[in-house]
Structures are given as C-alpha cells and as structure tokens.
Length: 115
Length: 113
Image (cartoon, rainbow over all chains, first blue to last red):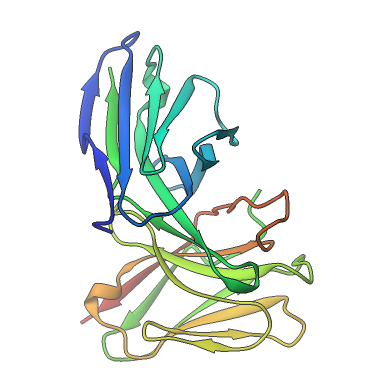
C-alpha cells in the first residue's frame, strides 16, 4: 500500500552492527506495528504503538527497540544485529472502524540479511 | 498459537470460484473472523471480515457457519493475480486487551490457467 512506506527495502549488514528500519504513513492512523516474517511462516508482532506516547512490546521484542517520532513515523532498531534476525520486516498501521473492527494496512516490507 | 486451521495449499482453475476453508472451533462470541492475503512476499492485504453474518465486498465473500466454528472465503472468479497465501485470523474487537492478530501459516492458493 503506497500510503505506508518502508526504508530501506533491502539491507545487508554484519553481526554486531546497529541498524534502523523506518516506516512512514500518510493514512493518519494512530496505531502502528512492526512485524517480522520468516520463510514459510506467518507474521509475528515485535512492537506496537497506539499513539505517539504509547509503546508496547509484542510477542518477540527481545533484541529490538522502537521509536515513535511522530504520528506518521515509527522506527525499528536492531541494537546489535545477529544472523537469526535475518527476516522480512513489515510495518503496519490500523484504523478503528465501527463495531470494534480494526483493519491493518501494511507497507511493502524490508528484507534484512545479517551476515 | 494461531486459533485457526487452514489447509496448507489449494489449486483452482482460472475463472472458477476459489473456496478457501478455515476452522476456528474455539472462537469466542465477540471474536471477528478476518481474511488477509499476501502476494509473493509483499505486505499483507486486507480482504474481508465478519462476525456472524455472511459478508460480501468487491474482492470476496465470507460465509460463516451458524455455529461460527468455521468459515469459507470465496473468490467468485479467480484470476492468476489471486495466487497468494491467504490468512484466516480471529481476533477480539477493539478495546479487548488481547487485541493482537495471531498469524498462522495460511493457505497457499495457486490459480492455474
């Protein structure tokens, strides 16, 4: 979805390096998410944020940190990258529809390889 | 663990209806059924959702059984561009603390010419 952008799209880094993945959205949504996907598997939640002052750990937050710089920007950092963090990373946003419905919109993904 | 069970793969002929089943036998009364799809490692795309009534939109139809323990996503006239992994997800409504989408492995749907 062009309304959710991720940079970089591809990244190769070495073990021990610090890297940052960035996500921007023009949808005006308060909620943003970071997921990772390993080959053949579904997505797993790393961190999520319900507004600029709210940050929450997801299922697999160890080894990651995030920053919500503004409503439109949510960054994911790997403080010291390790090979098992090689994966496809997705950012998502969500709107809050009526009747308790929440739909997520995803960015195109960042493919990360840690050597 | 995902609260849904889906077949790992399915084939469908182009132009025919694709019917993708999903079992969610432990679904709670306030949990919605969502369907997303992911085309070749792109970001997942929302398709449709429902609570207990059948739903239809421009992309698909969702049929939920009366006991809500299973559902079927129907793509009425499948095209080659519908080849993707389809995820069936159940989640509680907004406001519930257990809000997260739990993603299983999905069903890989291959549309054949």
